[in-house]
Amino acid sequence: MSQLSTAKSPQQMFGCVVKHWFAQTLGVEPEKIFCVSVMPCVAKKAECELPTMVTEHGPDVDLVLTTRELVRMLRADQLDPASILEEPLDSPLGTHTGAEVIFGATGGVMEAALRTASYVLTGENPDPDAFADVRTGPGGCVGGGGQPISAEDEERYGVRGQRLYNLDKANPMHFSHENPDVQTLYSEFLGHPLSEKAEELLHTDHMAWSMPN
Image (tube, rainbow, N blue to C red; front, top):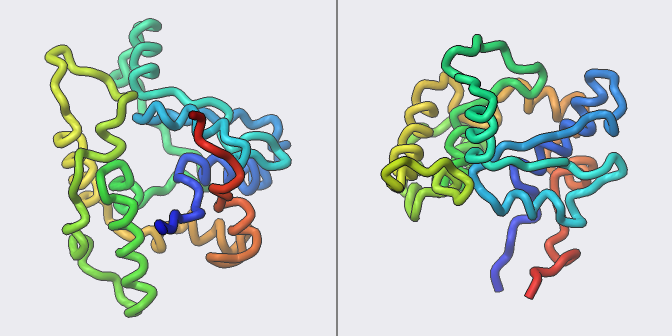
């Protein structure tokens, strides 16, 4: 019998943290926050509507757009992202590590987890590429059905996946446990990994819903 992780997906974890800790940090009512997720996978639309992805503040994620839908919206309004000035991300939750970036590639979540597991067991960070053997399969989330389609109808998950690993290499932080925002989240709100609050907000019950026939 396979044993599925009870951890919510990154999309749902982020939404739940936004509706709780981030709202608390901003001093606003969680119900006034409308959380929109932009994802490469169309299945994320169904995921955010699962009955287990809801807390007393409402759904973790209120709306999911695919990356293709976002591109179409930008084109409809004749917006050119390359000409828009970049702004710093909100803090907390604006800092990211290389381990986070590779989540979108096949085996990326496993690789990120192994990096931190190695640190927990040995007390030292491993070489970021020590677990490269898990980088297998069709391309992961970057090959999702919600991604933009090239004019040549060419599959580009390989190129997109490699781009994620390049971003990982360029990031000075390669390990999830080094993210200062994550560290602050636990010290100020969740307490510690596997705490009761972390279990309540970041995990789900796979037996509380069923797949449609």
